[in-house]
Length: 256
Image 1 (tube, one colour):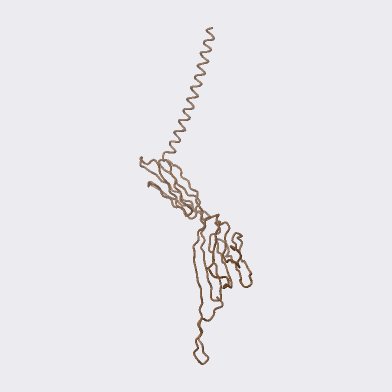
Image 2 (cartoon, rainbow, N blue to C red):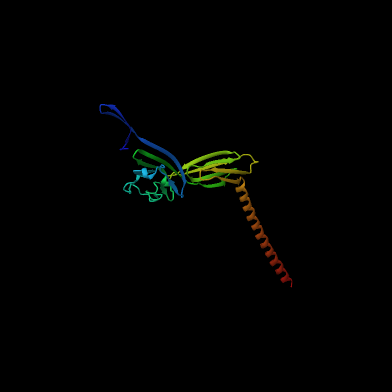
């Protein structure tokens, strides 16, 4: 800070004085997690605006230049430097509240938001590390040889997958360019007494519990085969009935 004030002055005699200066700098760090598509409110330190000289927000987003938003209290002037994201605005008006808001949080809002309030006696800084949460798309499907696949697609952060009962499981993580992650867990159960399995997907945006029958795919195929066979036999029976009816009709005709 450019300007500080003497906290105490001690006289040493012969026109000699000792000036003791005090510099106040308070730093507050707050991690913030917000689900994509919702509204976010980022607050400055709770300092009365009557004591503020300058309010400055510095925003550092991924793969973007640093953005600076300032408000000078005495002249009520605002300024912006390298700020292109129009969804980041003052929550109210800067003379009423120094807080910022994001109207609809997107993945590109991930980053660091720092508010500095300069006063005559020092600076007060509040820093927010904003993490955007993305709920994954969850699916559970049957596989071959008594296997099942549980998948949590494009979540942020990566989801956690667990199974009941425990099986022989392999989990793979796939990263995407937008910062999301797909988690795919494939499990196999050799025990013949295990008929139904449960996949539990844990995520900061919410949990999911899915279940499936291990023989679902086989049962479905067998059912389809039996249906086709039944239809074919029914058609064959109808054809034979028609042929037999025509045969007897012709036979009776020639007898007459």
